[in-house]
Amino acid sequence: MSRDRSDDSPGEQRLRRKKTKPAGRRRLETLVGANPEDISDPVVRHLSEQGYVDEVLAELKSGKEATAYIANGPSGLMLLKVYRDLEARSFKNDGLYREGEVIMDDRARRSMKNRSAKGLSLLQFDWVMREYAGLWKLWNAGLNVPEPLVGPDPTIYAETVPAVLMRLIGTEDEPAPRLSEARLSPEEAQSAWDQALAGMADMLRLGYVHGDYSTYNLLWWENTVIIIDFPQLTTRQNPNFSDLLRRDAESLSTSFRKQGIQVPGEDTLREVQRRALGPAPTPRVTLP
Image 1 (cartoon, rainbow, N blue to C red):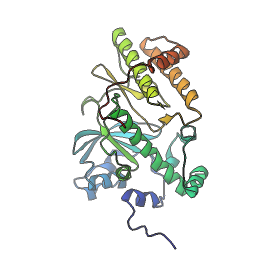
Image 2: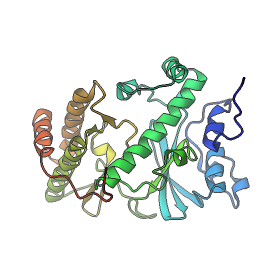
Image 3: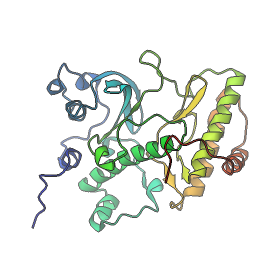
Image 4: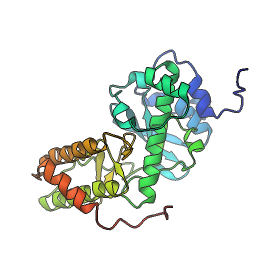
């Protein structure tokens, strides 16, 4: 007997729809309209109809996995991150970050492994869920990350797939630059380096490794380093945890050379491990 899908969430219903062409980078003109029904992009139209987004204002940054837009919503200025379909991404090897996960549903596990149409939809859904979950855990723990604007109930995450909504760092006219693009004085560069080490150590103390930690995934705003991009965030359950941690240390060291900081990757790793033994930041929410 087939299952009645009439009560499925809109997110689940959208995941089942057969796409004639994988959605990649959206053109800004498809994301705007005087009314929700005037917005041609189905993802942003749905977010507008559900009251998550009032207006998309500008494109901020396009990457290998997603495009970030500045938007207005019920809580004010936000960053709207819309993921490309997996088939349209240049980055597709997420297995490194997913190892060690337990997927109870055999059919779902096979579909994801074989990357069938259903499997790709599930992987897309999981990619967005991982970003929201990572944001909430690190935000609640007191780390400098953007405030997530949806959740933390996973059933709500499904309403925004394939998008993630978070508070904008900076202003509409001056969004926070990535640290890789910021021009820092020697004193600012040293402060940014110290903050970047502290952020990596804080994640390690919580049992996480970022997976792509460098100045390209750090923002610089009001003399503060903000960590971004968490779909590849993984835990000690992943057998690649130590290798990913070492890779993050090396990436951080290499990317900071542009700012005049010359510290070898192995020294960075040892310093992060040392700091991880110290006191944790003050949580925003008391964690269980």
